[in-house]
Amino acid sequence: MQQILIAILIGMAFVAFAGSVIYSAVRLTDEVPEEDREYLDPLPRGLRMLWPVLRMVDYHICQRLPATLTRDAADKLRLSGLLYLMSPTQFVALCMVSLLGFALLSAIALPLAGIERPGFWIAAASLFGWVYPRVWLKDSLKKRQKLIVKALPAYLDFLTMGVEAGLNMAGAISQAVAKGPDGPLKNEFAAVLRDLRSGLTRAEALRRMDERVKVAQVTSFINAVIQAERMGASLGPTFRAQADQRRIERFQLAEKLAMEAPVKLIFPLVAFIFPVTFVVLMFPIAVKFMQSGAF
Image 1 (cartoon, rainbow, N blue to C red):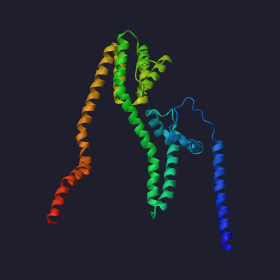
Image 2 (cartoon, rainbow, N blue to C red):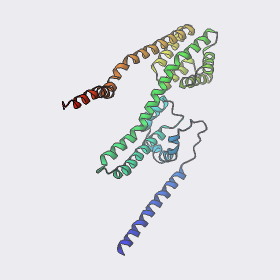
Image 3 (tube, rainbow, N blue to C red):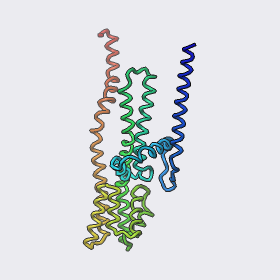
Image 4 (spheres, helix red, strand yellow):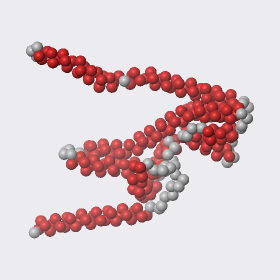
């Protein structure tokens, strides 16, 4: 009888604890103000499922953090073009939610798998959860920079044709944005066009683009344009020389990657292909030795 009473009390305590946790979570969620995402990028599917929890952590914890802790996240989000997807504090909240999620999953799964003393693996999973959003952000930055470098020669050709046809730089950029391929570079030139229309000089608008992109090829192009403007030179030959230089650099990069391919193939060859080849070649010989009684 006493054991039944203890079990009932433990069950009631567990129900009360779970109810208090759910009630607190609901209250904390209700306190979060509504978010207007009309002018923001759509959320990916996986992030959309975590977004209510992420916004709750952001509102109650991350927005109270000092700005120095979110400065690095703000710079990387700006360079990767994801500031229209989430704010720096929301990215820090994503890291926290990812850390807690991986720690909770590992704490549940490892004991069920029969692993004793899973503390080390739980700590490793927590560290992976903290690092994974940053790896995703770094990959997004690299992908964006590659798209910008790939599209830059085409846009320089459009600018060259526009300037040589008699348009000023704003008109040439407008034609390049209208006719050029979609991608992050198109968005950046559209931002330059908005800055020019708002009254900024060409040098200021281009420097702001350089700060948003931080790509060596774009920096070289912007420096050449600003130098040509200071010297009073024509922009047409400058654009054409930059387009030729960017195209040469792209071919040189392709040649470099092609020369690196044999080196990168050494490990797969040694680890996977060579052993299988040796097994295929040696198996008939081993069978013959076994049939002849040599073994």
